[in-house]
Image (cartoon, rainbow, N blue to C red; front, side, top):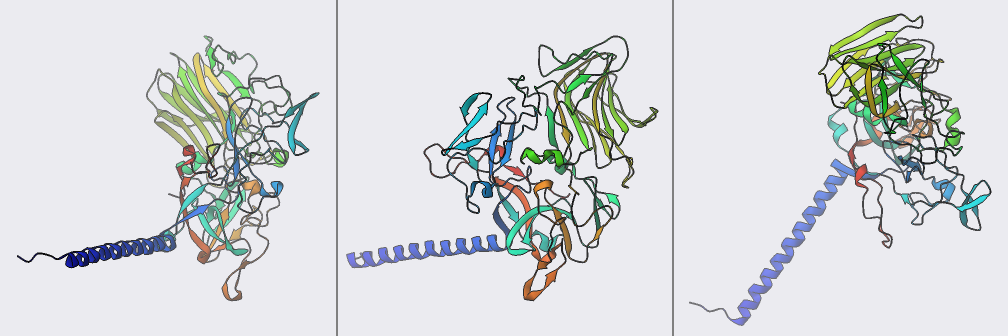
Length: 515
């Protein structure tokens, strides 16, 4: 047998090393090519630049917790106010400017921050206290499916990334509202296509409920006169002759113990708590008084019903009352109360009777009444025309809780639907509908008061070769893709770390769109 010489062994060893090197290089080139294909044709990472899609998606922001009640919310970081460069997130903690935020639950308005000698402070009476500083978090980073609209038609309520028609080098992100050939109108905050109201898929609707009041979060110093301009009081109040206990040993519980067989009611007072205006905790509160009232509302609570007892919630819209009732024997009803006091049963059902606390939700959104009790779901369609739910849109909405017998409530909350602002918009109003042509789309931001979108664009879109597009539309060839997952929400760092390498896991989520 031939024995390998040292020279042969070195040659073979060198060949093996060369083969290994070229194999590794080949693998790296293949991986790089695959990554390029993935990025250019399949998926793209996109950082949310502004707060126009809040609360669904956030640009650079502050993560706050109300110093009174502990409610968690986010507040916009405005680069222009802090003179920060575009897409720059400061490392230092900063005061909240230009105006302090208001808690979306208890209504507490943070003290105004003042700056003197480079230091932040607040005045409380005659006292001067250090101003609280907060960390700035980067905007959400999301995955965008780039190729999906090559094979499937974009759907209403999809969150889409597209080239800004006014500046095509910049990508925007909004929610798709209407598509080719459709006539779009925004009426009292709702979306109408070809004269019919458009309802959001359940997952989208759940994400777009905005808090008005959450009874789980009570202020620790209610005597301070900064809760919507006064000391804090429970915004739910007993109606005359009603006997709900609103200040029980368990502060978050409402209790009724009545044996007179009559209906006892508590009413939410918007002059004491946060009102029904289409406000966002993410935005500056100095604009709140200018916002329109939103009448699409939801009540949520956990309920325990005693024997021979019942619980219901009342929502008033355009002067007409709607009530959802659950009875101890398992009956369920949705009732309409006309302005003259007459009532009619709109829907009936049978649910499983339960002893323990059960999740109860009653909502009126997009002309659809929906009563949920645990797994039970009862709904009624009020109609799709603009006046199907009434015509007197200037009448304030109402929220009440009602009970008969023995009822215990916990985790009580009031929420409002998204409300698309129509004041001073340029198109798609009730009086001036917008009909889209072939390959044209209409988009709006979820943070309607602070979104520059199809409602407001004041110049034609700019295309290639000097081509112009109509004002207010996104052409099909400007669509980049569909946003579908927040994979890096904000990001924070340990005190001594220079990089924000730790994502905030509570913000990782699917971005819901059309069915």
